[in-house]
Length: 361
Image (cartoon, rainbow, N blue to C red; front, side, top):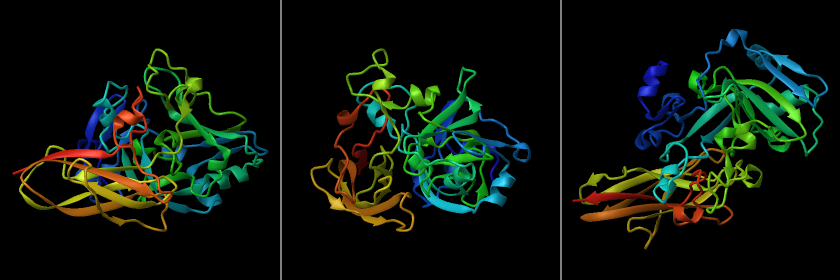
């Protein structure tokens, strides 16, 4: 496996401290399972250097039998499970909203996403071993070993108990059959398929069952969706929508934005994702959305939380073309036409038609 700095060199870096980076889109689209070296990295502080042999996980709160577990304990006491699922930053495709008006946060292109086989144990099994009472009003809070940048506060977040008990939600120690790399959460992370990556903390230290969401600033104050008239100065976190499930989305990975092409037939390729619904259709336009053609889609029916690949070949004549893509899910829902429709000052949940301009000679 490539070393940490070799893996970092393969990515487009948006920030070095904290380290945030995404892969070039053609490499992202090259394989259904995203290699760890090509997987986006979203950090909120320094990447901790943890020794797997000395690692312990605490499970406490509203449970009958608190637990103190090593990774070896998890592997010995609970059945191993592998789930294929997308991990996606809530700020994926923020750059499209930035083109409308200024937003906060890193200017992610459509590469703040990846699809992997996550191996670990079901969070539900661990909670049951701790003697949890499955009360729908409860929450499962996570605390990590990393500290939020410029603070002494450890990173934390929470999810509703119902999602914690869902069979797809894991405590993962491997990714695509390999141990987690340091930047992806070694030695243990949470994986919450269908939810924004913020709900899947890396470098997990503690799990607490409680009667309210986490009061960590990452949960209580950040990752909230606000209306377009709200600014950083007027935002009231309690009035924002907590970002959990991710919206229907799609992106063009090839050709690249600004590509210079020769006239003729060209393959247009990308991905689509619908969280816990299936992607039913993908439409592609070569004239900015005035006309559409249906792309071929490729998905794994046994992996409902994985992404769907799509591809189409179109004849491109000389001149400038605005390529666009929109996906439809199994409920007949589709994406908004323009990023203006869902713009918010944090640039979250950017899911309008993805548009790529190319020049053909």
